[in-house]
Image (cartoon, rainbow, N blue to C red; front, side, top):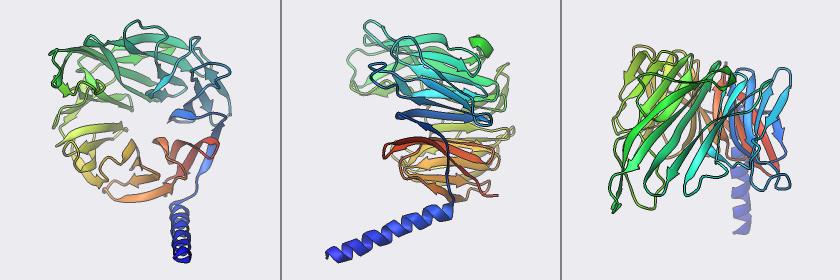
Length: 361
């Protein structure tokens, strides 16, 4: 019996290695001495959020930005001791947005938005706090592409004190564009958003469901309405480009110059699919079924949609056909695609790296 199990384990190991080999090889773009919390890439620039060693700060992370062509790299760390959240990072060219918890917030829970630039400095953009008494503000998305950086937040309040279940009303919110130097401008005409994506000078957003219900012990997480719209607008003017309304609940968005990718869930625990829509006419080009609750990151560039599903990094072509790009040894973080480069962060076996693989020709 033991011999049979050993043979089976060897065969399974050989199958995994063969699958990874057939899918392609990965290369290392950067290494970190500590755990990587978040990752983003744009053009020749990459950025990540590593933990700061406890000897330096009891609880802290930094924002690192690197130029892949020159190797130039800078780390930015707020003066207080932040703990960046998983929502936490977007990159537009050499400029990044990061999200961290504030130092003091009194009787509340909140997050502070920061911006930093390679060759520039770190700047605080604002703190968004939630009160346990039943109201506040929440950052719901961060997005970047080339010269565009933006984040979204909503304001909300508790409607019913008995909380069986809790009923939360959306009372406001906006999408904010962040210009060079940290200057902020509201994108006009955009509804309070639960999800946000950026690409080619445009923003895609899924308006937050109003009101939304949650149990008393569940985190207040605004979400899009079932069968609700996804709006694509000009990032500067807010002028509408197109609107689509997928059937189901939108879970993730990605935007390129000519297409919108949407992760949709048919029911609260039902089948998921990734849909591709043409810009600007909104025609659905393809719909691909994916494993329920298996997609952890989504991005689009050119003809490819890239996403991660547990240890697998997969591609979807323009016709909706799936293929395996790479089987990672450790669960990939924040998989994204830029040109022909798919990149992600990976922690495990004492190694913390930014890795990349090339899409098929």
